Structures are given as structure tokens and as C-alpha cells.
Length: 251
Image (spheres, rainbow, N blue to C red):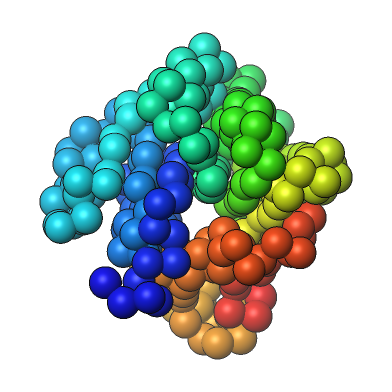
């Protein structure tokens, strides 16, 4: 590999929801640049094995972990396993795992509210808490939370999702101040319309309608988000913290 392909050589990267969509692209991007990647997923083993196959020659540096980021005890066990396996610590956490349960607030079952908040915001808390403990010991780290423009705009039928994504930004802004002196940065990436399976089943007329709202007149690709994650995770990005990087095509 060339120097540009070994930017993260020797680093250990955790990507939650790392086997599908944005997470898959992020996992592959870090693998391609020399990192060892721990990709987590909740239940889709077929997607996990597809990621391993896609990793090709890099698969030896890919570890797959099946658990729910909303389960505090499962997250704790995962980090205890990593602590025992990597004395040099974990350098990067990308908290990408997310859930949507859309519906009007007046009709929303409490479970749909709880599930989305517990996964999106609670999962970010669970993973970040143990990541910070790991990174404090090495006095270095990069924490990246994948949020959404819904945090600012709000979309009808997404009160739970919008609240969880706004909560991630608030948590990031507070956490970055707690850990800055230990050379740990905390940032968010806010993807706009990205062409993943999440929107693959939209009717063509609706896809065109959404694309027309984007100044660049097209959807982004998962690789656009992966590039942003690599930028914020780089050692050279040590003075970038407490910010939300908008990757939206100008929304």
C-alpha cells in the first residue's frame, strides 16, 4: 500500500452499524487505509458476511461483533473484550448505528419513541462512555457521531428521530469540552440525502422531488460520508472538535 493508503495503519477503529449503508462504506474506507476495524451490527448476519467478502485482502483486519448498542451490558462486555485484546487502545469510534420508526407524534406508540431514542442517542452514550474510558488511558482519540439534518430542520413524522439526532449534537458539544485536554476530539457528521438502501425503495417521482431540494441536484454516495469520517479521524485533525460537519450537497 502507498503512504496515502496507510494513514490509519496500526490504529483500531470501531464502527457501529458498520456492516450496512453508511457504516459499511466507513468500515471499508478505514480498512483500505490500513486500520483494524471492529464493525458492529445488531442482527443481520448476511450483511455482515457480505462486508467480510467485500473487504477482500483486508478481511484479516476486520472483526465483526453482533450486539445491540442500546444494550448497556452488551456494550460494556464488548469494550471489556477490546480492552483485553488491544493494549494500545482504540483510536477511533464512529457511532453510526441508527433506527427510524416514523409516525405522527399524536399517534406514536411509546415503544417507537423509546426504541429510537435508546438506539440513536442511548447507543451513542453507551459507546462513547466506554470509548472515552479507553482513550483517556492513551491520551488520544477520535469520536465521531453520525447525526442528521433532522436535528435542525425537523421533519413531520420524525419527532422521535429528530429528537435523538439533536440530542447527539448536544451530547457532542458537552463531551468535547470534557475530554479536549486529553487530546480526544468529538465531532458529528450530518449526512443529507445519501443513496443507500434506506431510500432505495422510494418511488422515482419522490426521489426526484427530494433531489430537487438539494442545491447539487443529486443524492450523495456513502463514500462521501466515509471521506468525511476519515478527515475527522485523522491525527492532523487534532484542533477540530465540537463541530458538526454537514455533508448535504448544500441543504
